[in-house]
Length: 432
Image (cartoon, rainbow, N blue to C red; front, top):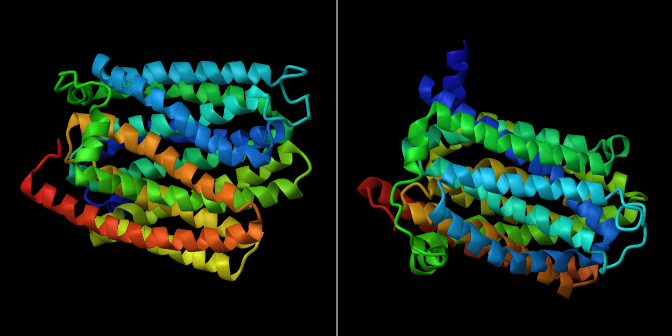
C-alpha cells in the first residue's frame, strides 16, 4: 500500500532515493520551520519597537548589510567543507537569537518600553538578523542538495523535500499564534533551539551518505570572493535564474506591506499582530503542503520545467488583477497566500533544479548572490515602491500596474531559462 502511495505522489522513486530525500526533507523541515516562526516575530517586534512606517527602510538596509555577509560567505566556501558552513552559520544565528531573547526582557531596551522609535537598535537587529538568515541558510541548503543530486532524481525527490519542509513551515507560524501564552522572548529561544538542530541533522546525513560530503569538496581551487558575482554577470543562464528567483519578491513585497499595514492598524497588541501573521503563515504553508504532496512532483514530471516556471507568474498576474478589482484585507490575505504558497511549492523546486547543470562556484557562490543579495534587492525595490506611494489608494493602483509590467518580463525570462535548461541537460553541458 505504502509503495503505491509513494509511486502516486513522487513517481518512480527508489527506496534509497526516498530515504536520502526523506533525510534532507527532515533537515529542511527544521530550517524552514524555525524561519517561519521568525517571520511573524520579525514584523511584530519591528513594528512595535521601531514603527511600521520604517519597514520599507529596514528592507532596503538589509540589502546593504547583506553585501559584506555574502563576501564572508564566499570566503568560507573556499575555506571549509560545505557541510561545515551549516555548523558555523547555525551556531552564529542561534547565539544571536538567544541574546535577542534576553534583551527583549530588559525594562528599557525590550518589550516593556512601549514607545516606538527608529533609534531603538534592537528592532533593527531583529529585523536584519532574521532577513539575513532567510536569505543565506535556505540558499546554502539548496546548494548542498544540488551539488550531490542529478536532474532525474531531483524531479522525483525535490517534491518530497518541499513536502517535509511545509510541515515545519506550518508548525512555526502556528506556534507564533500562541504568542500571548508563550511569550515573544520564549518563542525566540525556541527559534535558537530549532536552528541548532539543523547542523546536527546535516552531520547525521553526511554520516549516512559520505559521498554527499565528497561531492561538495571537488574542485578545491580558490576562486575568490567575487567569483559568484563574475559568473552571474557573465552567464545569461544565471541571470535568467536571477529573474525567475527574485522578480516575484518585488510584487510580493508591495502586496505584503499593504496587508501588514492594515493588520497593524486593526490590532491593539503586538501579540495580536503575531497571532494574525502566524495564521497567515500557517494558511500559506498549508496550501504549499497540499500542493507539494499532490502537485509539485506531478506537475514537474508531467508538464516539464518550462511550463511550471511560466505558470507561477501567470498566477501572480491573476492575483494582482483580483486585488485591483476587489481591494480588501480578504483579497490581500488570499492573494499573499497564493503568492507565497505557489512560490514555495512550485517555483522554488523548479528554480533549484535549474542549478544542477552548473559548476560548484555557480551552485554556491553565484547562488548566494542570487538568493541573498538578489532576493533582498528585489524586496528593496518593492519597498521603494511602498515608500514612494505613501497613500494606500495610490499604492494599490500604481503598485499593481508596475507589478503587472514585471509579470510580463518575468514570463519571457522563465521561458528562456526553461528552454536553456532542457538543452543543457540533453547535451550534458555544465555552466561554469
